[in-house]
Image (cartoon, rainbow, N blue to C red; front, side, top):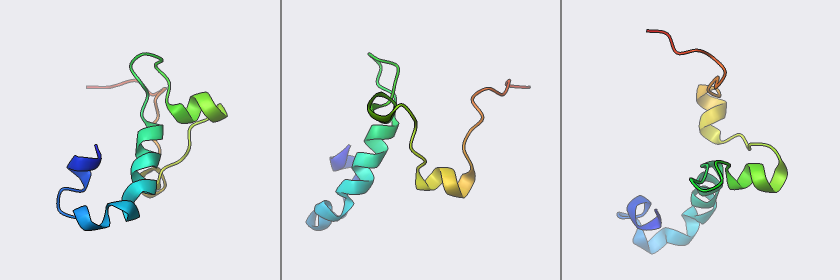
Length: 64
């Protein structure tokens, strides 16, 4: 993950660790089905993209 994200900015990798850690903690793991945020705090943390684009409605039905 770090290598792919920082392919062009290897000299400044340390400046991006907080963003990478936040993204990693927001993704559900295959074995638990839960994100590290959910397991540690009992809730999902809003990411900057959620604020900009809105959070997805996971309870909405998919319509063709």
